[in-house]
Amino acid sequence: MSDNWVVQNLQNALETWNEKLAEIWTLVTQSPQAFKGGSIWSVMVSIHGAVQAVGLAMVVLFFVVGVMKTCGSFADLKRPEAAIKVFIRFVLAKTAVTYGLELMNALFSIAQGLVTTIMSAAGFGAAQKIILPTEIITAVEDCGFLESIPLWAVTLIGGLLITVLSFVMIMTVYGRFFKLYLYTAIAPVPLSAFAGEPTQSIGLAFIKSYAAVCLEGAIIVLGCVIFSLFAASPPVIDPDAAAVSMVWSYIGELVFNMLILVGTVKMADRVVREMMGL
Image: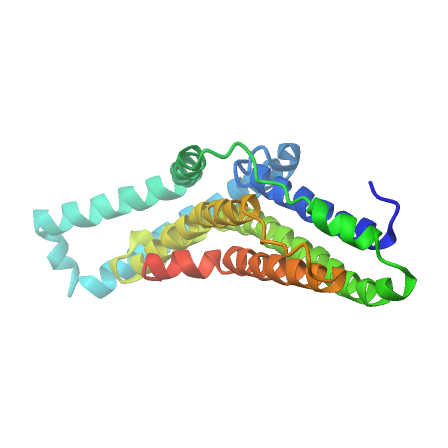
């Protein structure tokens, strides 16, 4: 690493970004069961099992309410087609609550398969690292004391922006795991709504929302792939320009691309929800 403070500041900021981007690349391929050694998942599964008893009780409640609203009288249940329809709905609702965890794991596996397909098709085994161009390092090291003063200001602002953006992005990806765990823990309650025809929309909305959270990983990977392609083609640097102009132009374009990636990661949930009509 260079002994120049300006170069060191930029390289440290870029190294922080590269580390967080590599961590994101690893996280989007991880399952909730493997995240943080699986300790959080074990607790969520225990909570899911405890809430399951509440969900089974609510199956009966939603079933009774649904029958009362959809049947004019109990005489309607004497018709075989009506009785069979109600019975099948009750069985399906009970099955959804009992095996809801397996259903959610299956949905997550499908979404992860899409993530793996995107990564394989893109041909990236890992996110591309950003390296400070040699031309900038040479130009900055050749600057005198007075010439380096504006460079300090530019690199301080640029380095701070890059560092903040890297942490905002990684926090958003961690937030996806929080949502996955929350959905897993509380799943039996909304799934019990399938027992009643008037309330089945609650269960459908829950499944769609969970699927949207799972598919966020695909949007995040796409964003990282696009950014990696940008990183593989760094901005053209004019060797005849002043060092301040070179650094300002480089940081400006780099931060702009980073903002697009962070915005994509943060809006992944909204993008998927719009695609699914939520």
